[in-house]
Amino acid sequence: MQFSRQNKPHPDKDNDVFITCKKCNRRSKKSQWISHYYACPVCGKLKNISANYRLSIILDQGSIRMMDTNIMSQDPLDFPGYKEKLALAKEKTGLMESAVTATGKIGKQKVVCIVLDSRFFMGSMSDAVGEKVTRGIEYATKHHLPLIIFAASGGARMQEGIFSLMQMAKTSDAIEEYERNGGLYISVLTHPTTGGVTASFATLADITLAEPGALIGFAGPRVIEQTIGKKLPEGFQRSEYLYQHGFVDQIVPRNQLRDTLKRLLRLHGMNVKEASYDS
Amino acid sequence: MIRNILEQAKKVDAKLSAISSSAKKHTIMLTRATLDPSIEPEDDSSFEEIPALLEEERKEILHLQGLKSDLLEQCRNLTPADRVVLARLSSRPHITDFIPALFTDFFEQKGDHLYDEDPSIYGGIALYHKIPVTVLGHRKGSSVEENLSCRFGMPCPEGYRKAMRLMAQAEKFARPIITFIDTPGAYPGMEAEEHGQGEAIARSLAFMSHLSVPVIAVVTGEGNSGGALALSVCNRMLMLENAVYSVLSPEGFASILWKDASRHEEACELMKMTSYDLYENGIVDEVIPEPLGGAQTDPTSVYRSIDEAIYRHLKALLKMSPKEVRADRHKKFRKL
Image 1 (cartoon, rainbow over the protein chains, first blue to last red):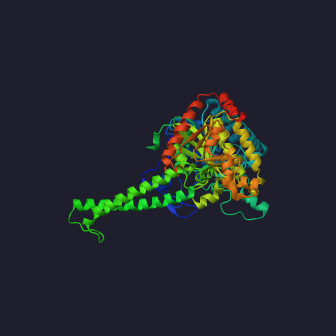
Image 2: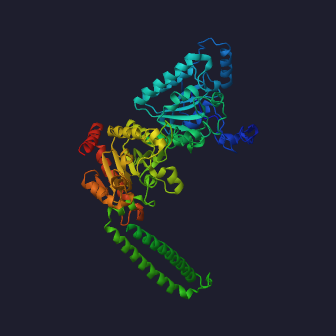
């Protein structure tokens, strides 16, 4: 399966609609949003983006090859209403699961790229997600490729119970194997990264980057507030907070992500070419 | 003594720069007047006076330059206490100057990924003559706010754990490590103790001793106590001429031994802490010469000599196998 960069700014003015920013409530044209990689043109607040769009702004044009597109959730607990919700999510997003795995190139260096799509069940970890992520990592191990994971997750998928929990062990095992084989793993934490994903593969990277303003933590803020009976301070568990507390190497704006990844690949001795659609 | 010299040199420098700028202004005015005779002078002076003025200024500049070189000449025979003063100067180049001068593509890595980010340890990945290396060291900061946030280059356990995290990655990706040592010591604080300052330093020593990638440490300022050693278990230790390296700050040494911190100058003599003493004792492998009056008088030449020394040693070390690198380091410390 091959993707091209579909979401390029289109000059077609008739199709231009206005999108309102949830933070500053200002309306901007869609074409402007696109040229800012879906950061609010006025205040810079990031909008969540789909996994396919994410791949298209990171990898070289025309280099993307999807992997394991047929893996989907099995509903192991026969959870009431789950199948219907799954069908709805599939229809809405056009995805089979919240994890999208692909190989592609960054400046002609082949990489494995795994993206969690927060539109699909809030990127939660089902057994299918765990399986896809693990297979992606194993592929990278086998072919000695750099691994880049864009995490975005509400945590474990409650509808799959214990099977969801076990994915944490499975993916962490795969990462450890990958790293012991000397692979380079770059994790990019995007809004929101919480729960079982934070507590497994997302935080095991060699280099940990984060998008500005992303919520990153283990327990969600609502759970913490209920437990301790206190209101949490502004900015708690945001990227900047984690950065100050030494869990994130660098916070990288979306429009600099590709360049930063390129630089990191170069710093790890890979022959990264300038070129492709940057020009 | 050195303090007086530096103060005088500073005054001379200030005068020199004032006079040269006024000389420059006069030269420009003169050139303009020659090109366009109709032009009027900006101030009360007339163009006829300018050549005489310029001549005077030229003489004054020569005089001041002579004065300055005389002052620097006095820096030839520095006492250990003088070197301590030089090593601690805030105008001396620090790691934040060395990294952009010697490396390219620097990517800063932050945090120990355990508890906190300690700004007093600064480091990341960079290219050195196109070779990927991990570079790290103590950061003192150059303004007062930076000094405070970096605790004047005194790391907490989090700093050492961050350093270990960076070095573990260097080991994984077979990157040589270059460290810059410049610290008054590890941070003596309540929190630092609670978080295991001793353990963190010990762990760092043990960890560095078994690294299979080459490690080059450059002592650039003062290196005191375990706080400095924790980043300098290396294959080659290089040291700037006026840097100092010892078991403790001379003040601390004097107060422990004689219960009188004011006898620190006396302590400096006894402690054998200058680069030449350490070179004689076989602790330091090479002394990198500094310009007269200290590194701050001509940082560019210092960068050049550091670069030359690191490159030479690194080239030799890169020829060794990982096992040989480890054995080489073991040998260096075993004989001490």
